Length: 271
Length: 338
Image (tube, rainbow over all chains, first blue to last red; front, side):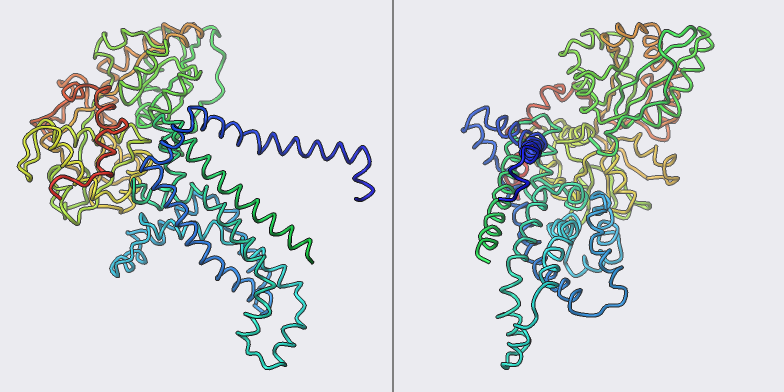
């Protein structure tokens, strides 16, 4: 333990920070969970297995899963290109990557509707080939891909930057092709950071509302995601139904983040 | 309802109530009347109040989805006058003890404006839309908002439901009744492209080119000319619902603000010939049919019905939108005859 941590000021700082965390994060989550379970376990189960709630949750998890698979591949590739290749205007490209974080999510939805909507040129061409994006499931995945775009790139990039390239060079001199080198040497080093990026993307995607509400179409048992279901139930006076689904979303995010932290800690301890 | 409309629009900081020669009136209204009120009725009433009493009246305005506005007033927003989309929302305020239970006994039975549920279509009517049945045809993309979040959507869906309930479903040879209502609604719902959070949002999507037809209120379509400069052609189905929008005094706010005189005068003005003419200019149908000078060009349909004909809001909210109601069953059970 460091010297600073044992001083009374350190104790004060620690308790202040933890109290702040409790007030900002734990308290709202606790209240929500208590309210969701207040009418009893049976009522909770009934609200959760309501066909509309259940479908909305399934859709949210399925679209988030599709998004992370795509993001894991494209995000790693983007980070790779940014670190290993010379690109003109690299500083500008780097700034662009974080832009999806700065765009209000409603604007994201609007941009996607204008670009891929049934009335746009691109949307019309896609529609003629039987691929409808906006107001269908692909639109939801697209919106999630946009809002979570930076996560994988930003967690893989620093690892790639700090990586000792001697191992890769050794593999190459021993006759391994570039693909084998990547698979056997680079990927095992990158793997934890890819996982971190996808886990953050996934939990971010579970709660995404602003962009999805504009592109999904909001049709019950078809394109209504869990956050949209929650919004509809709040507006039509079914607070309990909304809280039950919210609790499930939050608990899933929490579980993902806890597992992620444990994995990182184990790795940190081993190295 | 609409996220964009959820923020109350507050007028400029006003002189405190009670200042000599000046009155203050807080308006809690549903979002659809925003233009008609802000640009039409409120300035005209201020003028009228100045002429009759010599006093100045200032307004604080809030526009929100009808259900959300009712909830806001219920939980403490001190509007002097509530103008809502449906009487079911006003009844919530009666139940909360904020509005007198006799609100709908006076002139106009508590209503201030009327409209019709109609079908807007594209210029030249390429899909040949004449009535509800045409919305159920394949290859017709339909827009209306989500009844979970929009009171307006409930008017629209009730119109389709009522057409089936009271007049049957001719393509299926179903006589009037719940089966016909469900069948018509299920077949139209199958053609719905997107269900937006509010009527305004649906309209914006339609104006951007989404869908072939939009089910909405006549006044919302007529307002598009002023808002966007384009006319939206529409048809009035032979059997459709008469929309009636209520307004009432919020007793608790008026007592606290001590402005009963101006609040009562405002409600009376809304129902007066002058007030009705302004609402008419903004696309609403007047309470008094004699003021409907354009009626020859857009006559009332032959089989018009009201919420009372459908059994009232309480019954519809239970039978159609309640747990296990018809609306949910459209999605959980396949349509009849399909």
